[in-house]
Length: 320
Image 1 (cartoon, rainbow, N blue to C red):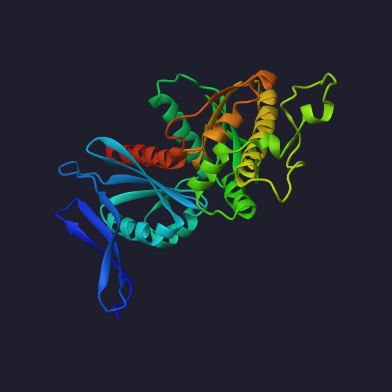
Image 2: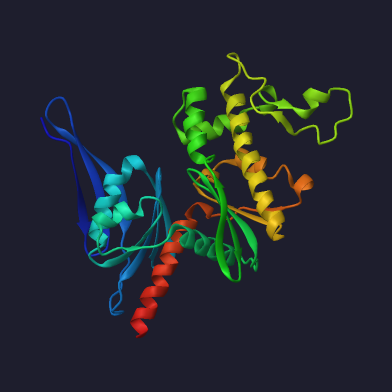
């Protein structure tokens, strides 16, 4: 029996193919490519390339530069061993700048890596994303929807974390799995998109019926109040998505009113390919007067911020 093992092939100085090898019953084995990546070439520059890493609770996001162009990669926790192998190879010729909840733990594996504060990295990355999208916005409320949710005030003076919530992507995956039996993120997103929350949530319209309501009728009077064992997966997931969105908007609105900022910039992996969440985050604009902004690469704000902070640090060091 051939043992399960991992390794890599290398072509020249720049290309790696990480692989996993699994045994067959007949003693032979099959090779499965796990990660194919190029490293940036810096001949003649005297500098080491920078790799920005956001080591989150469930996902690892990486930003690096290749041929003058930024590349963005996301890896699940199941791929962590392969990612660590690749970074071990790159660490010999690259500077790693790591942020996120697992940054300190990863720092034990890469003692030469630079640890970047998560809040600083996220805010720096968000500013850069807005700049890349030709936005001149300088003051805004930043909402980072990761495993949980953090809310920041960003202005010319810097970035300040104001408040947060345990509701976020972890809630969507965990509670969504309990409600439906599904565990794949993209399947949960697909089901949520097809669902009707009004079949599970009790709305203001349900409470007041023919009477005039003092608040918009589509608002939620009670989350999941109409749900029962016959409720469809899709409807339960859409109700869950809406509950997460409602909580986030209510918290962000408190921050907005306190600091008189009307632009909400949403980032984080939970927004990736998740139109239902984006739609629900925009449904309160008339009531609460805010302008939502969703940067295209918002999931990579942390890793991009770590990359940019590292790039500036290396550039400054080489000028000395």
